Length: 115
Length: 118
Image (cartoon, rainbow over all chains, first blue to last red):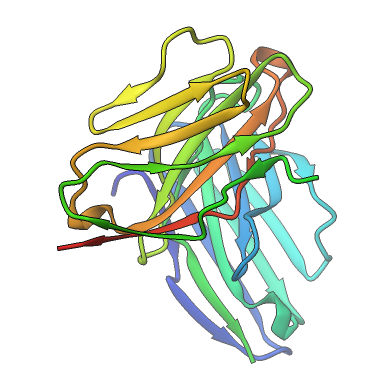
């Protein structure tokens, strides 16, 4: 595997379900990110982890719970979601989150549908 | 006010022609970085090119170049000799600050949907 991988690629869940999204980066990077991409809206940064510590949390509802057990893996735990949470969830990683030239590399995304 | 503006929601271009995708930005920082990403229908966001505010020359990466006009606060992406595989959404993004005072967060534009016609 190379780059950034995400599983599952597609997920359909009911509002009462609990599910998790997984992201893995094979680039040796130090930071990982979760983004939400809704139709006709700019990308929204949800969470940032640097060296496994959460450094940014952009007022995301508590029904989204991130977990970063090590610098290569990132999870997004989902519970009691709403239909408006249906979106493409993108994971990204970067080498040096404090550096201005730092470039984020993205995974293919998980297309989430909440019924 | 929007910090990143992409005024072209969609564009049709004939294969092999050059195409320019517009991006204007708004920041009061002297140090910032500008990025372009490509998103095919598969969903993955692919990094294309980066321009720093202090870079004196326009960035180039293969068929991609960035027409950086600092005074006008524009950072247009130019794709030379377009190919059918260039059909995708294209996003312009900015990070304010450079070096250790830079912001983690990228500010994203709404994107331009580019369709290459055979």
